[in-house]
Amino acid sequence: MTKVVQVAVAILQKTNGDFLLASRPQGKGWAGWWEFPGGKIEQGEAPEHALARELQEELGVTPTAVQPWITRRYDYPATHDASAKTVLLHFFFVTAWQGEVMPLEGQSLSWQSPQHVQVSPVLPANAPIMHALALPTIYAISNIAEMGKPQFMRALAHALDQGLQLIQIREKQLTRDALSALSQEILALCAPYQAKVMINTDIAHARQLGAHGVHLTSRDLMQLQQRPAHLLVSASCHNPLELAHAAALGLDFVVLSPVLATLSHPDAPPIGWETFAHWIQHYALPVYALGGMTSQHLSKALQGGARGIAMQRGAWLAD
Image 1 (cartoon, one colour):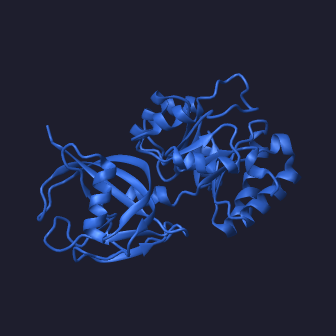
Image 2 (cartoon, rainbow, N blue to C red):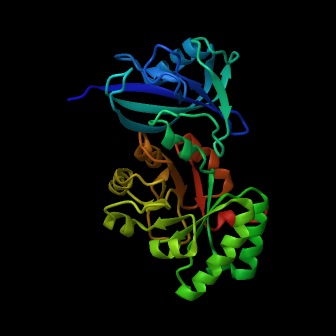
Image 3 (cartoon, helix red, strand yellow):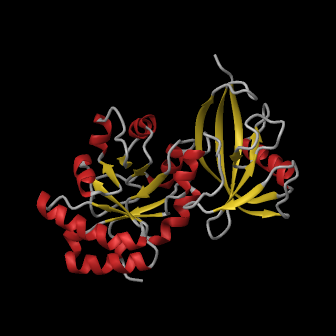
């Protein structure tokens, strides 16, 4: 069996969301390729300790605010300058540090925006993380059934002005024709903001409308054997089995619920923050917390390892 190399990886991130990439120096495998800073976890070493050690050795900084995030496995093929190997990458957000970032190993450094990565080539194992970092922290779900269309469209326009970048259209009470007309209106409204629109459940309909992606119910997820191509694909999950299936399919992100009690499903017992954090520890995909969420819960979700929060009612509350 191939030995798995454990690696601690740092996403050094500024308050504006920009993150640091480093080029691998000459003399190392995959020289010239760009990656997140970090390095091998030694035998018996905790990933957090390896992260701090590597950042000190590579960049001369000491992390002071660290949050565990995604864990991903990647099988590197053999190249002319490196042998084949399998790595298990433990990604951490590092949002504060002591010291000035310096290239202590002769590497090039570059701060990049998640939406516009301008350096290349990026190490294959790091590429999916770029897509995950481009996901916003708020995932809004439409709520026309309760609000009515005029009020909802006003709330959506306001949210887009405030920076909303990801919305799911979920209006099961509508006929297909009515849903098509509504979706076209929402897509047109979102286009100038470059906000991404997901269609609930119907893959063919999402493609027909030219939507950015599809959001699958947990039932749809468990029946799916292959991820749909050329779409953003997310899914609702409620237990570790569904989370595992979503990861095996390589979806773009998942929503885990209900974290707290919710009006939509009053009979569903909430899993709570402790279980939420436990289930997504070392998970491979970005996760949004759903169920009773308001904007005040965002920091709690991030502390638990989430990418952000998903909201149906809370997303449309007036400031």
